[in-house]
Image (cartoon, rainbow, N blue to C red; front, side):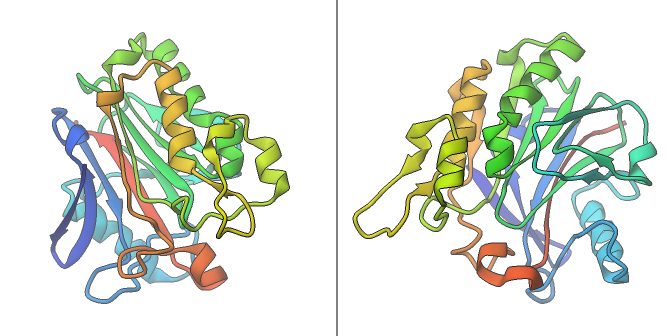
Length: 254
């Protein structure tokens, strides 16, 4: 399970599975630091506190000074192969990034969408995935695994994944456009007390990872709902445009 930790006045989560892999650093941020407004995005924010918070977060998890690759998240199925640090300056369009570079952080920003962190068990490559409903419909999790396997000559059963905090099925009411786009009908749930169907993002992305060949015991899924847990997480569904941003990061030690 994901473990909630606190260090240097910053609260974050780490995966027990990913923590076992030598040479891999990772974390899922929360809104908790000295106060409850700790935000790590957007990356291009003019607010100087965002960059200060990002630097503090990296230092807390042992990656002080590492460049953070910036994705211009477009709710797509696009997977970017990071071969240099240019995107640490100019964001590159896409919703998943993978790399074998060392001393570089891959990060995805969320405020209800699903962050997924992936690592090879021998520390040869890592990936970070942003999966909202559009990315889920585009099967971005499955595409990322396929790209990792092909690019770095890995086997799917060598990969471990952590599905981070996201809006739970309890709170994710969706319309007909979403239900029509999601091919995994089992992820669309209905209850008598719900006016509309709800989407189980975790279940849909878990199924994609399994179909891509990851063993079930090598996937960890957070049960924490970003909308319900106002004490820990930012949530766009709950707070609207005033919400902060969470950052989920992964990288390889030099």
